[in-house]
Length: 177
Image (cartoon, rainbow, N blue to C red; front, side):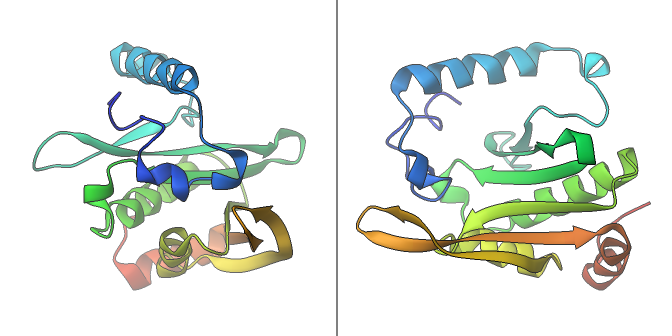
């Protein structure tokens, strides 16, 4: 896992690159947090789980990424989803779509939230494709919101309502109970 968190890995180019690459110390702290989470008893986790959950490749049992949610604004019950595939060899194989789809169902099942969303930027083609594939709708585009690395990029938010998710699950053969 520590190798996947290395600041030189390509996933840092798509996962909020405008924040800058993390330091080795920051990634070491993240690795320690993930390792502690892996050793913890899942029964002790709050529900819905706020911690990043691992995305595991079934064939190898190796962690290839994480999926999570966090509060955009807890006072108004605004939850935001996130997914990252840390292993570039696993990109384009459907892991993010499957994990985010299952996790979206999990959060809707575990809460009474009315909507979920995710935020990215206009050049993150993978995340945009996952959102569209799962039936999320583009709700906001802040034009020219991010300037970095010699370019200017839009900030983009995709969302899905609880009632839309039920229909999306049916269309895509996802399980939502």
